[in-house]
Image (cartoon, rainbow, N blue to C red; front, side, top):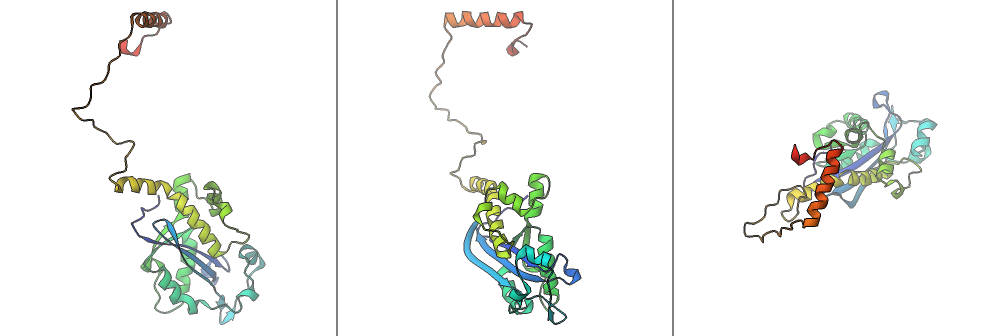
Length: 244
């Protein structure tokens, strides 16, 4: 389940693009995209940066298969900052927030790998709490679902052009998905927090000085028709529930 949103809690919807799938094999972050949300509303604030991936003092060369996914070429990244140049401003943006990430293990793994390569930087969980919408989708649907699946399910897939899976683009899409995923929760929070809101399932008590209910009695003809219907039921071998 999605952890309950706290009033005015700052959420950062985050995604990254990388040179590969495993930071322990030397792969690096090449793009970070974040959008800010408070009270389930996008604030308009975002953080977006492209990063030149480095290995042993030289720019890494990406496989074409990876380039086909996010559309970022080696030439495009050549004049971009390295991670060390943007690390502190990135930390400043996310610090103290709850991160909402689809498949958080992947993104946080890369972030922690990048942080660990620099002296004095914290781990992600030291400065942020994390909600993984991939795990949430498993709870909701019985199996983990992709961001594409969730976007189609919640009918927000047409709100963002995703020709390429850019980090900021995917963060924006995940924000729309998250809003829909938490819509029921927002309704429940409103009912529990607003004394004027009525719960349809709550017990409603009537006052003792209420007007008496009008009692309608059956006519003689209606009683006769009722007895005829009961005789038919009896002939079929059944017995009315109130006779049991």
